[in-house]
Image (cartoon, rainbow over all chains, first blue to last red; front, side):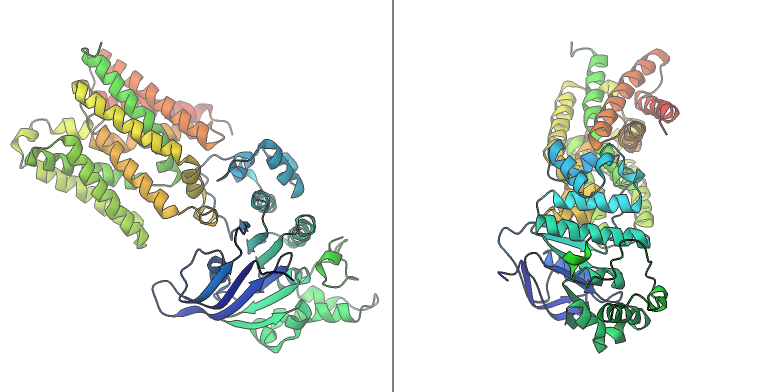
Length: 270
Length: 260
């Protein structure tokens, strides 16, 4: 598999100003081209893990090794943009590193928002804005894309479309993807590996493995039942069966759902 | 040419306008209006100290403004309830400054010069200081522009790009302190924030990028200086307040022609 892009060993992080750990003794690694999703309830330390991996947070213990020269494209959680700053999409792509018009255009094309360069950021919908953020993250030609709750505020079709886009980007650029998410059903379908976090690593592995792990089911309860159903559904695929279980869990059926295909991410993206 | 008091006043005003416009944009973008107020109000205390210890007014106001900026930054970093805290600091600084200045007999007579500026009394040495200070701050802003704009837009995006938002915040606080010290002779302690905020707010209406807003704010500020000084001469009104009145008129016009 080659060298890990980022590897953390025995990572411990305390809540700021206290000795109370948010994360304790977490081992984590992500390899080139891999899509890894971190799931966990609120306050489980997902965002702290991301920030520690990015080197933005002081460690109380353990080590984080980033591969030398690693380029990371980052899409932060809930970007609160200050509406007081006038900012076109084009200008935003040049922050903080200036890019040429051709580069900007290519990035916007790739994320499906080609016509929006002259638009003010404040005039974008939630979905358009996420795609612009992704385009900006791609401009550094990253080895690793890090997305923290990238689909907050999107509706269900928007979420599905966004993850399809992520898989497409991974296929085209070969970048590894590290995501934090609470969209259990959708995000797990597109992941190679899922890490279930709750202050420590509860369980880890392929989506199928995690979705049947007792630790995962205990943590997510009813919502996890839906994931379980999803994977059962994959395992004994049958067109006559009843979709009620999935609908309960909030899955929206639409063209392109690709139910016949397994959770193998490259296969699932059209 | 510099022998004429009016020419000196115009040049001093333009020097301040050039830097107050762009810096004021950051004050508006980062919602630091109260921050500007407390730093500017503290300048009166600096005047009192400078007169008491017989040092340059610029040195006194700069020292107190820097101290105030550091104090406020430290409080922000500790996550105090900022709105109330800045209100307390801003008005206390002004009141303490006014009390302190009453102990300096020489300053009592021309207190209003420090509160509202005395741009018509600007001398050659003032001009040199104002332009040197303005060039310094403007140079810093231009040099760090991309970093400053990124961290003003969103601190997490900045951090992910290897920018330390705390450093940029400190830079802006120090720039603000320098501009406060420069502006005390031009518009006075009470109207410094107005020179920062009003032109930037006027430029916001039609600007589509941060650069255009900064340039627009500098233009509006310069226009306000010219219009304010001209009307002050014609109507015999106080110069500092006339400049800010002109800026307010520009702001109203900008609201009128603002595109939806």
